[in-house]
Image (cartoon, rainbow, N blue to C red):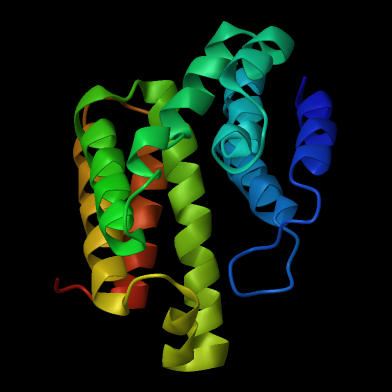
Length: 193
């Protein structure tokens, strides 16, 4: 299942790069996979981690994901996908804020443990990439994003806090991932909001 998902996303995300870089987008998906593997997640959670952006960023539908990879994987991928109605027909900055607030609300209130693991691994790899780029590029790293550093700080700090709070509900891999997310967010933005 994991190797089928790797082949699937390699094709679906072909030609896509990480924002503002020449790094193929699939590297992010493989990093999320690695985080979930190292955390000891099962093959369906790992598969969902590999596929987490395929519905949001390609022409693949959630129905295709469900047909090929099963209902549990599809539910996790759907949880990681921002709703279309928050992206269409809106100003980019308004859309960004609404989409990010939706993610925060979903993590804070609705997401299942499986969905939280996928989301946390995704956010952890994203903030780690920002941290590494900030070391080499300094403040120029923020120029690649649609919104300024202050908005990114609000988002990552709020997501990390929501993830930490939800991680208190369970014992296991989410606790470690949530702590690592908070630590990396604090390294990038400092401890104060």
